[in-house]
Image (cartoon, rainbow, N blue to C red; front, side, top):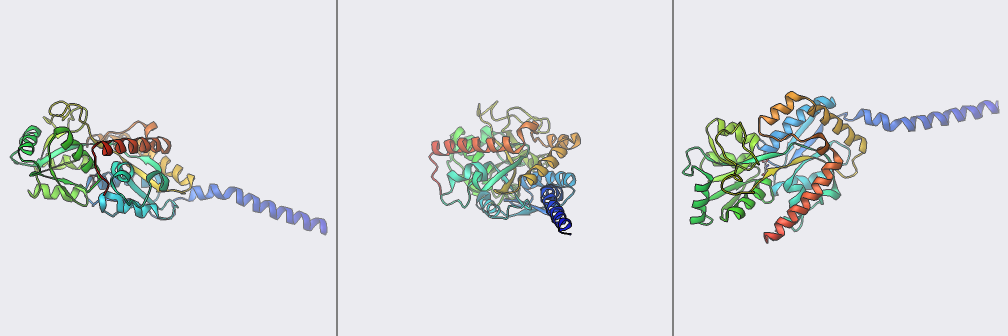
Length: 331
Ligand code: ASP
């Protein structure tokens, strides 16, 4: 009887140990069991929002779950970043970070409420997107040269829309103004979506925005693309020269972005998200549709968490250098 009891106990303990051993695997299989939120720190309708929705749709299909996009604009995207930095690290709240929020912001804001690579873990990198110098259709500037000449004649008179201090449109515009040796007055918006609406309405003179949302507007004849910030020309913007080939040799600008999770998010969640993203990127029809918007689809060895962390760190160093060299004081 005693013998029987001992072996029952041993069996029970063994069963508990077995359950404990298989629990992590079950948990990994279980993610996600409810909708996952991707927080976009800019207004709906802009390029970050558009690319995030595009990718979320594919990733959610591959995950077999739902991804909800939440827009929380403010302070160049840093309001949204601070919110996700404090979210529960369970894989259900993720952040769409970019050039500004994850690399430049610590050098632009004195009291930033998060540290990009301490409070977040990089999950995967979206494709990069070059930018377009835009004016309203029918504007008096018929070329980037004409825009720069007027800005040189009247320093600070021309208004230039941005998505706020430290956003990629602002960083690229500051870089553009410094390279062209001109002065614009920057007008901050909650995203380049609302800035573009004002550009079409004639409230501002010019802006830089990513190709994915600029293309429908230039094709529809509402905006004119004066120049591209890419290395080479693009078929979808016929007759539009690059700034580097003409006015500003060496000038390149693009926005990079990707998904970041609050630090402490379980590795199996990061792996599951990466597997789903890899599935999405393996669909040639999907990557072709991105390329048709001028979006640079990256080689797969550049998109995973390790490469994305190294890239974020190197970009932070680059923006620290650029911001200090330009003498920009953190606000
Ligand atoms: N990508 C834009 C920027 O940082 C913002 C947006 O997507 O609305 O300038």
